[in-house]
Length: 275
Ligand SMILES: NC(=O)c1ccc[n+]([C@@H]2O[C@H](COP(=O)([O-])OP(=O)(O)OC[C@H]3O[C@@H](n4cnc5c(N)ncnc54)[C@H](O)[C@@H]3O)[C@@H](O)[C@H]2O)c1
Image (cartoon, rainbow, N blue to C red):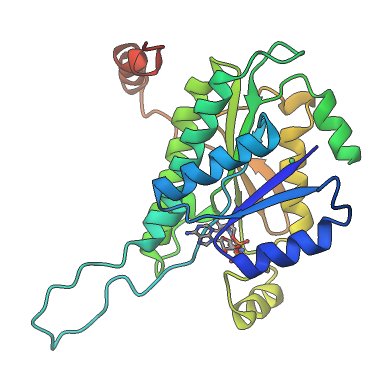
């Protein structure tokens, strides 16, 4: 199994490549620079991935940044300042761009030996993936901020809520084409996105999630078994409790449910083949 990593962090990509590509004749990973917020950049990176690997069966939109000072509090200023929208551009638009590229590629693939098109989420695990019944999948990384409210990070919360809604809606339609699309929603994990101080505080409070739990969640989605057909779901990775399918808001009554069925019938054509 080959892996293609696209990221904005060029020194990081170089270091990863040096660490993993020990055999120059047979690289374990390909890398390229990308800005997921820019369509031209991400399309170029995706085309490069397809040309390097021939076909892609799994896509993982993961890149993200934390909240910026998007709404500077300057009561003495006379100016109207445009908010810094980079969190929306990267954590929301970037994920939607990546899913869109994955789906277009999956739709062009011949059905594989298992009779299905593609997956987006990841050794013994390699064998499990190869033996899984379905082989085209997207697994995005959203966040628990996609359904819980963390009040001081409004644009991050908005972006992650958007990805949760996008997954729950689009993932259900894609399942009709044998493409699965789910999101994993971890609570705090020690990475470069947060500060050492906040992770220490979270660890003391028992709020940290070990990275292994997140990887277990990817494995669960990718290795066949009872979750092989799961699509349109957000998997919470919670401190202490671990992994669960995050519950959706229930319809308030039968009429609200019927309304969603009418929307399905009215708008299904948007996803049907156009020549
Ligand atoms: N660490 C956590 O506590 C936590 C919790 C929930 C969700 N998440 C989500 O996990 C994902 C990964 O974040 P992480 O925690 O590993 O942080 P990280 O900072 O370690 O990694 C983020 C990666 O995204 C890349 N990136 C940033 N902007 C980019 C752009 N415009 N184009 C391409 N690449 C870009 C960075 O170079 C970096 O490699 C993010 O979507 C984040 O919101 C993280």
